[in-house]
Each structure stands twice: as structure tokens, then as C-alpha cells.
Length: 312
Image (cartoon, rainbow, N blue to C red):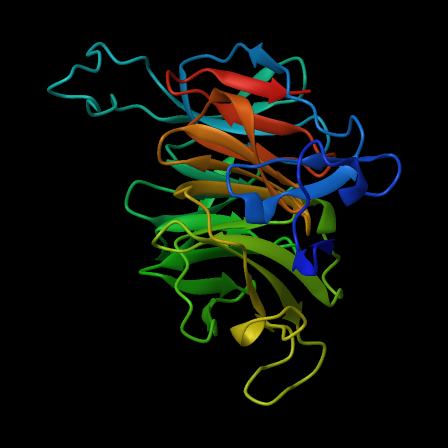
């Protein structure tokens, strides 16, 4: 808390050294209410390294350390124009796995992928049907989703019409979000938990582009209205049903990926890249249409022209 002539403010001011502790500096942001103190030199722009991939990358999913999956399509013969800025992508989607040196092509056509820290890979086809990769074959799990993610227990979770759905290995069930609509999810990669674990965290994007951050729990035993083994919303965080709505910003976010409670990345509708750190969103260089974060903290993005980048 900062006080001037008896008026106290909750944010620091760039250049006012006394607003932060020794060894810290004030991070100034576009929304002054999100200014915060951080260790001197802790903030630095990410350096992006291009990783050559066959075809035009449309989506990326980071898995265990050094492994990343991408969805690619052939390069479009039709270029964007002012009259048609988003020409239809050519047919022939492919899913590939990168182990740090070699690309391996997986069978089938998938439009969105989600990777877990335990090696599981899930995909959603053009009709929204969800599949799990078994060997080199996609096996349908039934059900359709608008967006797909993997929770910290290695199971597929996603959204449909603003509602959240999860799969427990036997079938899909609705996750009670107390009426809070979510269109896109990003579970905390560094919080991967074994099947008998109890908690996890995820960041979500609401239909209006506003971000919420939530703690979610897995029931160890039967609870009121919650069967054992099912995930549910925890009241650990502030806000209704455990949702912690982040401070309002001008950003309208379309894709989000997280490593843990206080480290997330997002892509806006304008293809801007932002990183959440030290209590606020920091603009990072470059542009992207998708983002993913591995359990080791490595961030991957897909550029607007279909190039793949690794942050460092």
C-alpha cells in the first residue's frame, strides 16, 4: 500500500523508488491499477526462435520437457486479401510430434490437440468429436466440444456452448461452474498431479474475452452431489464458486496457456502476445494465433503465417 498525504493507493508508480522494497522496481502497465513491484531485472522480453515444421502450423500443444505436438495444413495457395482476409484453409490436416530434433507424423486428421504431462494426447476433429491417441491411432471418446484441454490429472476437459465438460475414463460429465461461462481453457502445466491427487489449477477465457483463474479439486470420496473421482470447483479462491476474476483490462483474449497460479500466457484477438507475471499482463514481442506452455516452462507460439516459435 502506498500513501501520499493520507491518500493510499494499491499500485506502485514507475520511478518512485520508495513505492517498492529494496531490490525491487515498479512495473508500469497500460492499466495503472495493475502496476506492481518485482525484483530488479526480472522482466525481460522473450527471444523467439523459429522451429522449422513441415506445412503451415495452425495449433501447438507442449507436452513433457522437450516434446511438442502441432497441427499443420498445407500452405494455402490463396493469400489473404483486403476483401478476403481469412481464406479457407486447404484440406489435409496433419498431427506431428517434435522430440527436439525430429518430426514424426501421426495418423488421422485432427484440428485441435491437447497434451498431458503423463504423455497422453487428445484431439478434436473438424466436427468437434474428441479422440485419444492410442499407439498411432485415434480412438473416439464420443461427445463433441468447442475447445479442448487436458486437466492436471491427465484427462480431457473442454467447453461446449460456454459449459465445461470433463471425461473420467468412462464417459463425459458436466462440471458445475456456478453459471460462469467459459469458452477456452488452459490448465497449469507445472501442476500436473497423479490420479490420486486432490487439486489442480486452470485459467479460463470467458465469451467476452475476460480471464478467470480457478482452483479445481478432485473428490477423493463421495461428497454432496459429487461422486468420488469427479472434479469440482473449489471455494479456495475468491469469487463465486472459486473463480478469481482477474482485473479488467482492454485485452480481449482468445487463447490462453498457463504454467502455474501466477504464470500464464495469452493471445489476443489482435494476435498480440501477453505474459501474466507479477500481478499483471506484460506485452511480449511478436504476434501469434496460438500459445502453449510445457511443464518445464518453455512457451511455444504459432505465428499468423503458420510458423512455429519457441521462447527463451
